[in-house]
Image 1 (cartoon, rainbow, N blue to C red):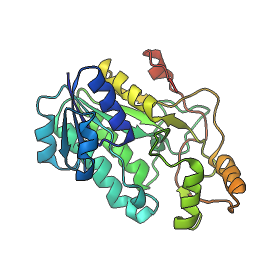
Image 2: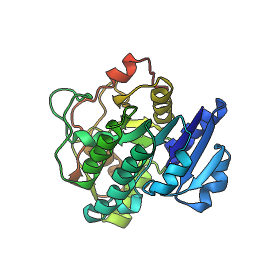
Image 3: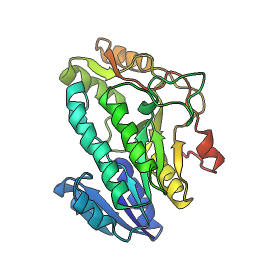
Length: 272
C-alpha cells in the first residue's frame, strides 16, 4: 500500500514508522527542510510543503491508497486567541479542504475540543459539536466537515498527546506558562485532563485506515475519568513553588467522561 501522511509531528512520524516497518510505501510531509533527513529514516519519500498548498498536495497524493492528516498548529501561535484565528484556519481547515479535494480517502486527526465542555452524562460521537466561536474548536469542526463530505472520509478525535521523548512534560509546560505567558493559559479549569500516548494515537489512525473505517471515532483512553486541569496543574504548581495558573476558559474540552466505545467495538485496544 502507498500512504501519505501530511504533517509528520510526533504522531505522524510514529505512524510512518509503523507503516514502513509493515512494508508499506510512505510519503511524509513537513513544513521544515531541517526535518527531511530525520523523516527519511521512517519514510520512503519526504516532501516539504504546507497542507494548504493544493498543487503540492495533489502531486504527493496522486496514486496513494489513503491520506492521513496529522497537522498541528504551531504552539507559539496557539496561546493567544487572536493569533489562533489565522493559524488554525490555515493549518486545519485549509489543509483538510485541500486534502479532501485532492483525494477521496482522507483520515483527519481531530480534537475533543469540538465537543466543548460536552453535554449529558457521557460524550460520544453523537454528542453535538460546540458552537463556541474560538478558532480551535471551530476550525477542527470545519476541517472535519470537509473530510466527512468525501466518500472515504474519517475523523479520529483525540485528547492531549503525551509520551514522546521530544514532548515537554507537564512541569516543564507549567514552567513555560509562568515564564512566557504570565501564568495564564487558554484552557478551562474544570475540563477533565484526558491524554493519549503518541503511540496509541498512531495506532488508532493505522487501525481506522487498515480497517477501511469511515465516519467519526473518539480515540480517548476511557477507563476511569481523569482529574481536572485545575487539580493536576494545581498540584504541579504547588510542588514547583509557582502560584496557581489562571485558566481563561477560551478553549473548552469535556468536563464529563468521554466514551471510545465505538472504536473499541471495532476491535481497537489502547496499548499504553
